[in-house]
Length: 245
Image (cartoon, rainbow, N blue to C red; front, side, top):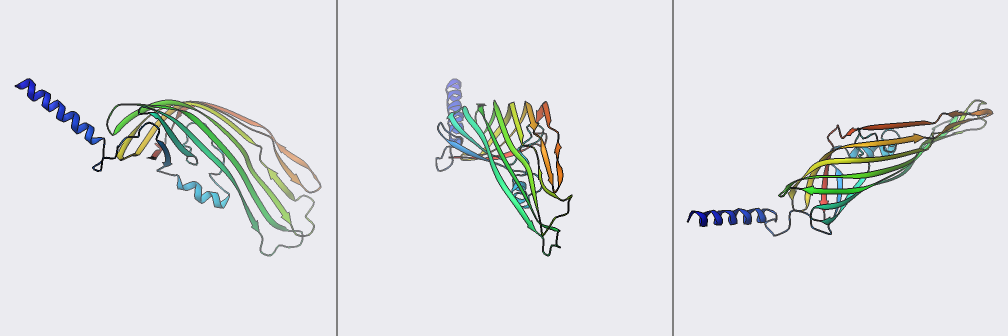
């Protein structure tokens, strides 16, 4: 009798657990094989949209030093099966801001144009562990970044002064990173989740020679730079909101 009650209790527990993985309408809570997802940074993704219009801060390419979250990228996954996903990140950014002076003096500054270009790509594999709404995951990914830096062009009314700067070009940037990560994802609604992760990775970056062009004076050049880093990341505890479909 006791064994029979124990078996019934276990069956009820298993059934309740299975039912918990579906909504009241029968929609699966967890993603299934073949599902795609898109992720949105839940804490600071709006910063870039404001800065996109002002041509100032936060418009530089990703640094890949792995201590800062890459909030300006689109993230997505494709579920290979219930416990494995291919993941990727993409950012393609172009922009320019032109400022025209209201009443420039003859020989004075007439307009300023600031432009930039950033391309960031990343791809990897993510594997899940555990059951239920809260699932742990781990994996690895590689990342590549290209950028033009900030290029500024100055225009003048009439004849510019001999030493006036007409153009300032930052050197182009190149970044490469390889990273391992571990995190957790909680499914609070059918195929909707919040996730957060920490990582450890290697980052390499270089910046090419820049140049300042002036009227009637030789071009001034800036030196090349390079950097290397090996560290943990996501010290700011970035959180993603994920949608599967």
